[in-house]
Length: 193
Image 1 (cartoon, rainbow, N blue to C red):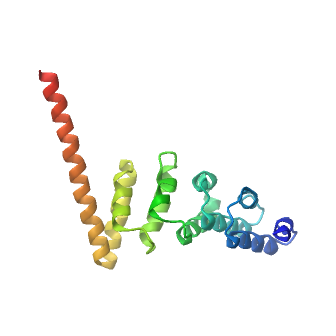
Image 2 (image 1 turned 120 degrees about the vertical axis):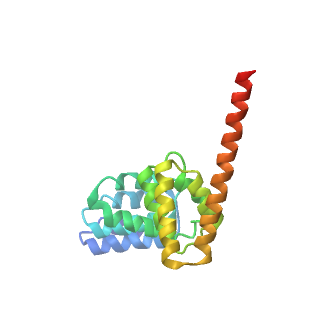
Image 3 (image 1 turned 45 degrees about the vertical axis):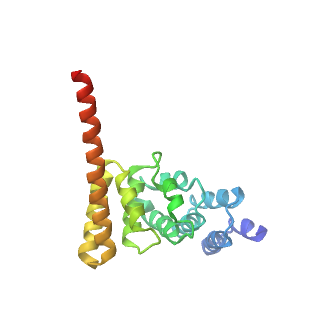
């Protein structure tokens, strides 16, 4: 590992990129590895930055969303952003329990859209219930985008999975709307008394 750290400053960008890749393959999320990969996100060569982003995505540290926040607003970071998303999608840690890290309240809307669309397009381990729950807990703009992506996937693939996701979302939305109407009616009745 010491060799990897020292080679992250090598003159040759290919060696730095290989080090970034190997740091991710180790599977260790210690601060020193994550900090080294974060430093490599600012390397002068795009391929080094892309490999570092992929490795961070694979390692899926608890602050993964914060690390990638800076990658969203600059168009030159498209390759790095895509590498980060591919790393997250290929991570063994992309499971139901960790979805809140990616889609919690503190996460940028644009990041949520990139990740949601990537999860939907890739056949990942995310289940029907996860997708429905994710969609229902988002703000309106993300819901619209997500519903559109799910509909497109269904139209392309015509499989049971996507039909079930759509049915689950519709039934949950109706349930939420009925609860909201019920609560609203209770408030009105109290005010009339």
